[in-house]
Length: 333
Image 1 (cartoon, rainbow, N blue to C red):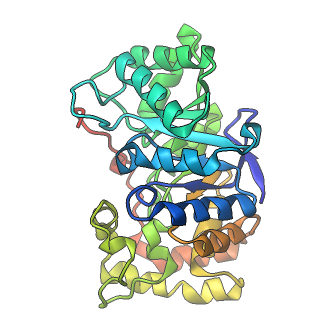
Image 2: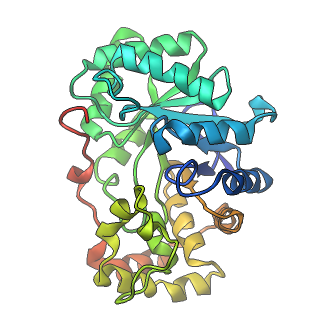
């Protein structure tokens, strides 16, 4: 397993990290989830990403139990705050109240004294950015959080946060967690150039496009039983926009490129995002240990310029590049 710096910070992270989004605590039983975490550890993954909202807070509990007893210094644990974790009007967003209460809940569920990276899961239009950043800075000074990041923020939002942090002496954002894959490249036009300039690293999710880039979804055919597209707890809604025959047909045409490099389709997809030097880590999830073992083989793979060009030619117009697709709710959910 190769490691990279998280942005321009001194923190090293495994270039493939393990995420437990909709799987742990919902789609996958705990024994299977623990087996996947163990497989990640066995393969050299040291970076684990979760969020308070995943599986209604159960994902953090599962991850905490799976990592219990390990040397804390050998791990990088990431979590997030923003989405609702309760019925109250203050159980959401990036106010001082919710951030403070949420970090305490996350630390308790994860069974740790601190998290390595605490991320604003979306931009909160209802809270002054100064309030959010000051609260994050306080958590850093208290030792409960080591680094601050964001997820799915636009370049304009990130730029404003950096300006405020510099003016007020707050800890700066070191990472952004966007969706990024061969099919979804909306960060490339604006977010990546700003991030390269400001020392922010991308910790990307869905590098396999929720499984579409594995090639298992066939044009004209129903989704395979037990796949994410059949998971009504959240996966099916997220993946549905990609399950169109024009997308699926072009994905099938990537098979020869993967074969030429001795890679599975999933490995090719993960290796592709890691070719971007602004990517610090690619998050992979799994419902079976075998999937983890397959995905980590993308670490260290180099795709030459001709291969990258062929991938672009195969996918053509089905690639989404519009930076306006990075959107946070206008109001708290």
